[in-house]
Length: 604
Image 1 (spheres, one colour):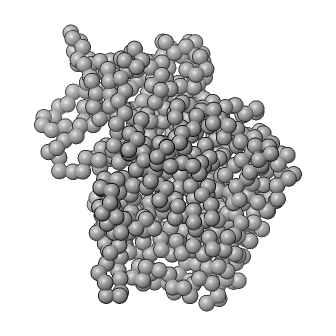
Image 2: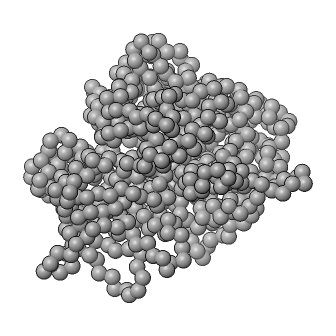
Image 3: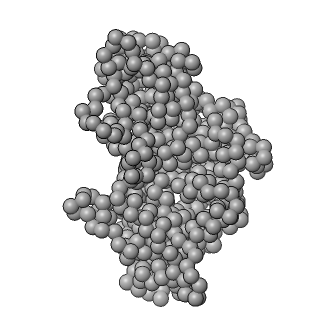
């Protein structure tokens, strides 16, 4: 468990930024959820409901949702925000409390058809009720995300069933999980698992010989682990074992996992599991690994520090589910690879970066069964590293005779900004850092991607979420990272124009926020930004935007008119379709240009 002092410091930093956003939004729930979703890195952009759906008499609540049409997966988000949370008490929530909150979202599903009769048709919550009602027969999986600012004390997996749905998963996102995710992405791990003491079982592996001599960055072991031991470890440690997994979540989902569960349920097939399954790839910082006497190259794995499953999360989830169902796993084995990442003081390279690169490559090459999030795999490319370096070195221009004081801060890894703050002493060191890198100048890799893609005319891609936007962003900029021989050098001008696009997007967002439009805010921002460039891009100099660090206020009224028209278009053109799903289609963007260009092209 994270030390109390670290928790308190993290909570203070987290709440400081949230307070600023809550004052502007007039609500804590929406900025809190928005911030938490940023850490989740979901492949589908959740639609945050404005207003959230809440029926206190029937105990129903939903704050956001997303629907993966390709895989028929429905995600619902429900927020538990405790206003009494503070750094002195560090309030927690029990499993019973988590189940009560998850049930609020569950009741929206079970009452969806009836809710269609009572909810205003102009609200996003009506779209959700309609979506559930129309797709109830085809939805393969439901994920309920409980997002809380309390600490989930037990950290045990939560089980819930919904009539008519075979696969229902409950995901808990508390402040502990966010902090663990951040420290994991920064290469900081403290968990120590004692297999022998905690589970009464160890596992044996062979050390892969190293033909080279001299310094090594890692030791690699191959072998197998009992499925029961793997299930017990996950039952005890939960999401802490998979925070470095290239997939955002560990759950049994999709056809692959149904096949795994079916195999485990069949007594004969169960014994063939090790032959059928690709196994797991894991990493650790160090461990107590004992050579077995009279056994050439064979070692007993007794204890590990910072053990992480970087591939095989799907396998682990399915095995754990079978374990919870009481399926006997005594004769089931999983092939496994263990890489001990060696810190090498003689290597002139940041150890966290070295470790991130190694984990990313292990994740990329070790598994081909399921889709891998490109944003995680590509975060360590030279292009991303160059962006990070420029943001740490380039000062924001000033024109009043003073010397520059601020820089933009590009987060190559999630939570990097918080980690940088906490590495400095409280007081003057942290104050100076925040002055140099203000919180409103922090940009994540997803922010950069969405801002670029929206400006370049792909609002439907931004509407699909950070994952799709990042892939498109990297594709549009592949000359900077694709290969060494073809690689274009990152320049100051390229960096300045990237930031300029973000400045424009942020201004569009500010204006849309001021307008207090009801619903589909993210889609309105993306489409308005794209249309602004489509019609007036030649009149907007990105270098000038960088130099002034703002978009001329002469565009404010243009943006307001465009945003209002965008919202009307999205609602009207969707017809009987779900507006959020319609906004993800290229046909929506094409139709928007065809129907609205003449009306909007002479605003200035």
